[in-house]
Image 1 (cartoon, protein in one colour):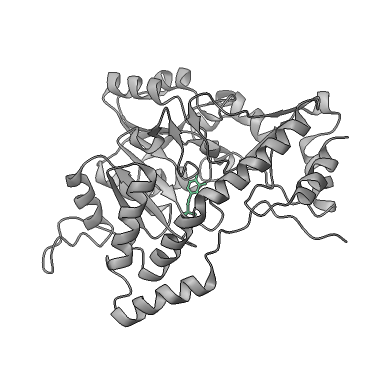
Image 2: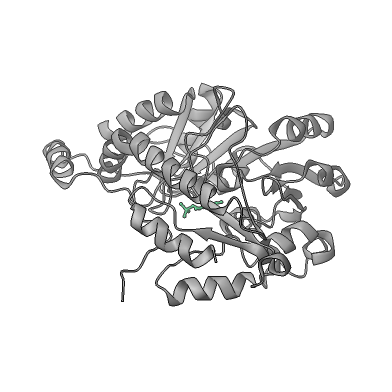
Length: 368
Ligand SMILES: *Cc1c(COP(=O)(O)O)cnc(C)c1O
C-alpha cells in the first residue's frame, strides 16, 4: 500500500532554530502577556502583510467573537453558510441572529446581489468570508454597507498574504481576522489575529483579549482571555521566514493540477484572478456528476480507498447543522448555489511538501 496523502501538512520550523530561540524565552522568564517575541511577531506580520496594525490571538475563532464585541454588534448579522462553523458560531455566541445569504459560485464568497434583500431594521453588520483565500466582492459589499450604515467584519482565515492590486485584502472592511491553525498556510500551531486600521482600535482590542485590563487595577470592558504566548510567537517568527517558499511550492502544485484538469469534462476549478496575489491555501474542484460520470462522493471515496485524503470543504453547509437549520434563512431554497457547490466540492491535497509523484498519483485517480 502506497503512503497516504493528506489534504495538508503543517509548516514546521527547523527544530534547532526553534530550540535556539526558545533559549532566549527561557532566559527571559517571560512566557506570555505581550512578551518580546509577541511584539516582534506583531511587527513582522505588519510588515509582511502590509497592514498598519495587528493583534495576535490564541486562535482564529476568538478574534471573530471579539470583533463583534468591539464593534458592539447586535440584532442580526448577514453571513455565509459556506464556511467553517466558527464563522456562524461567533455570531451565535454573541447572542446575535445569523442571517444566511447565498454565495457566488465563481469565488464561493457572499453574493452581493443577495445582501440587500436580507437587510432588516435589526441588521447591524455583514460577516463575509474570503473563502479559499479568494477575495470577496469587496467593493460592492462596502457600497451596500455604507448605504445601510452596516459594519463589515471579514473572516479572512484563509487569506493570509492575499493582495488585490498590491493592497492587502485585510485592509478592507472594518475589521478582518486570520487563523494560524496548523492546517493554514501560515501557522503558529494554534493562533490567530485581528487586523484593524487605527491605533485606538488596536488598543481597545488588546484590552479585550486580556480580560479588559487597561492597567493593573482598571478593567474597562468584559474582555476575554485570548493572548498568544511566547512559545508560539517564536514558532510564528520562524515560520514567517519560510512562508513565501511554502506558498511558491503550493503555486507549483496548483499549476500542475490545472494543466491536468483543463480538459476533464465535469470538473470545475478556479484560475488565478487578475490583479490578485493568491496564497494557494486550498485547491477545490467541483464535480458535476452528470458530465463527469461519477458523483462527488464516489470520487471522494475512490480517492480515499487509494490513500488520497481530500476534504469536502465546505460540506455540509453551516445552515444545515442542528443549531441553525430552523432559521428561515437556512432553507436550501434561499441558498441554491451554496447547496449545489457543497454537494460538488472536494479540496484536493494542497501543501508545500507534495512531490511530483504525489500530484501524479492524485491526478491519476481523477483524470480517467
Ligand atoms: C480555520 C478557520 C476558522 C477558525 O480558526 P481556528 O484558528 O481554528 O479557531 C475560522 N473561519 C474559517 C473560515 C476557518 O477556515
